[in-house]
View 1 (cartoon, rainbow over the protein chains, first blue to last red):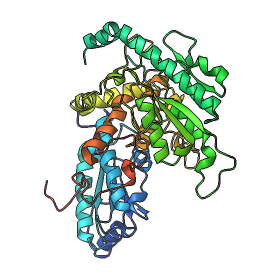
View 2: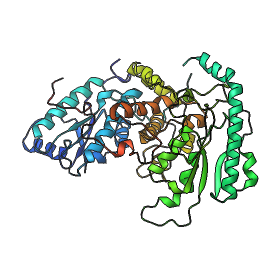
View 3: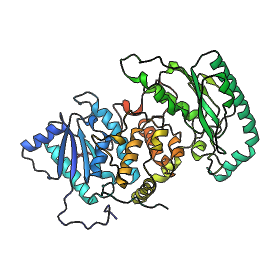
View 4: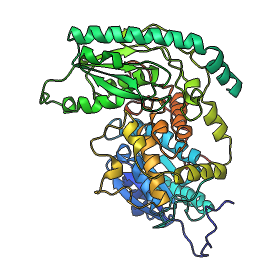
Amino acid sequence: MSRDDSKHVDANWEPKIVAFLCNWCSYAGADLAGISRIQYPPNVRVIRVPCSGRVNPLYILKALQEGADGVLVSGCHPGDCHYISGNYLARRKFAMLKQFLGYVGIDTERVQFSWVSAAEGARFAALIRQVTASVRKFGPAGKMVKSGGQQVKSHK
Amino acid sequence: MSEGSTEFEAGLTYSRKAESMEKSQEKLRDIARGLLSEKKVDFLIGFKEGTLPLRTQPCIIDSIDGVDKLVWNSACSNNLAVYLADIFRVASSPGKAPACELPRVAIVVKGCDALSVAGLVREKQVPRSNLVIIGMPCMGIIDPASGEIMALCLECRHPKLEGVDILIEGESRTPAQGEHDRVAEFEARSLEERWLYFSNEISKCIRCYACRQACPNCYCKECFAEKTNPKWIGVGNDLSDTMLYHLGRMFHQAGRCVGCGACVRACPMGVDLRVFTEKLAKDGKELFDYEVGFSAEQVPLLCTFKEDDANGFITDPDKQD
């Protein structure tokens, strides 16, 4: 099954994507896309952070738990971090996290990472189009979602 | 690894092992007597006989009278490094002089435990100069439930210790050459099979936090699992909360976990944590050529970077799929 669960998929379902954007590059790039009137899918909810290195892996896990269908973290290109090395540290962390989440069985392309600079408005829009399309293929999130009072499953 | 080799080790080498361990135990007691009588340490953390067969207990000895309690055998399973962070907690306030004089502590360690101690020194939780590390030769720990050497001991790559102050002679295991085979096997399964296994294992968890308490690296003054602001994890038995706890705790150990198995031994429900913690160790090695070592000068995996670190996982809209 390519869907996470057997929930009936609403024909009008649209993926909800949470995007953590670094203030100095990616958020500015998103802003530029807006100012330039470049159209991109409205599925993304932006959370501005000072640096991609500030993103705690728990934010990503929590977003998935609260029902985000996809999570994007975007920062400055390597070498261009406003705080010199925040994105380098983030890169290591997220390389490990992405592989780890895929390993435990969460669809790998639900959580994505990218570099977008402040001048790359069009590229930001292209990124959102790409991420939205790939998350849409997976269907609504179900695996990590908190359902409230779900019984602990019995085990073999 | 086959069952046959386990029986071979346990059976045919038993008498050789027992004799070697008796000698190591005597040497350990002699060293302890010396350290305590010459007041080189304030107390020593080691093992004494347990209340059940194939079990020992940690013990703290502060005078020569207690030295004869000390034992060394294949039931010395606990990772004693777990006590160190609390003992030296007053030392870890940056820039401040400790509130009271720090004790000098001797600690009995196996290979895995010595890696934990090195990690604590590296992360500035424990001052190296206050420690006397006594390295023991380890042939592997016996699982009391099965009577056989634990699987993780058969895969041990660090039975020979480095960076200790006193190295007790004796027979120790040959380092294993395996490259995280169990992880590779798990990786080869399908996404849904892996999710099913993960869900089943985590659904056994009763959130007793014994794994966290037993882990020497879990020394955070306030654990994320207990924070109420922000509240990362709910208090109910929702499976996704329990998953978040384990994913969060294991990822917090990325590059720090030494694979001692204290968490697995402590777990009352038999949750298979190792297949997941080993994945992080394997990725650290493959992506960043990093492996935990005995040196306190080693920089932790996620505290550093290289300009040419793995970039392939980054989504690039300019690249056509």
